[in-house]
Image (cartoon, rainbow, N blue to C red):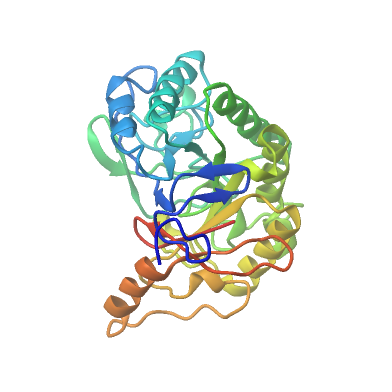
Length: 331
C-alpha cells in the first residue's frame, strides 16, 4: 500500500469534503485563543501567524467566532460582524491559502455563557429561558461567574438567525472555504435544544420538534449563503459543559441528526466528552456512558478510530481521519 493508492486511503490521502478539496485528512479542531485585538475584537498579525503555522492540515476549523457582540462570552475572542474583523480574517485566510491550506469559520453565539461587561450596554446575556448557568467566563479582570440571563422574546429570534446569515456573508467575503455552525457545548443553539435550559412554551420550546427549530432555521439560512457543500455543524449530545443538561438526549439528537440528514449540510462534527462513547453512531445506536475503568481505553480508540462517513445516499465507507480530541467529522 502506498500513499498514492486510491483504493487504500491513508491519513495523508486527498479527500473531497462536501465541495471542499483537502490535501490530506488531518482536521485541526477549533481552539479558542483570546488573541483578538483589544477594543475591536479583530484578528491581527498574531492570529495570521498562528493559522499560517498550521496550514499543513487538510482543513482548519477556526476558533469560535461570535456573530455579534451579544454573542460574545469571553474577552478578546474574534468577531465576524464588523469591517475591521472581516479585514483581519481576510489576512488569516490569505495566509492559509498561500500555504496551500483550507480553513472554515466556526460561528457561535454563546447565549447565557457570558457576562454583562461583554454585552452591549452592559445588558444581561440572552438565553432561551431565564435560567442562570453554573459556570464561569473570562473577562479583563480574570475569571468571573457568568451573569444571569434574560429570555429571548419570540420576536427576537429572527434577528438571531439574521446575525448568523450576516456573519456567514462576512466569512465568505473574508475568504473562508466554508463555515461550521457551533451548536454544541452549552452555547445558545445547544441551550435551545436541551430541556434543562429551554422551558419555553412557544414554538421554540417544549417538544423535541420545537426545540430543534432554531438550529434548523440557522442551518437553512446559512446554507443559502455558502451552499450545502460548505456548511457543517458541531453537536455535543451528552456533554456537561457549561451546565448543559437534557433529560433524554438520545431521542433529541437522533431527531436532530435525522433532520440534518434531510438538509444534507457538508458535515457534522460530534464532540465526544469523557462521558460518552461511540458518538459517531448517534443516529443508529444508544448513547452509552464511559465508566472510569474503560475511559482511557475508549478515549484512545475515539482519537484513533473516528471516522468520516458520506451522507450521500448509499455510501457508508469509513475513512480514517485525525482529530484533536474526540470528534467525528461526517461528510
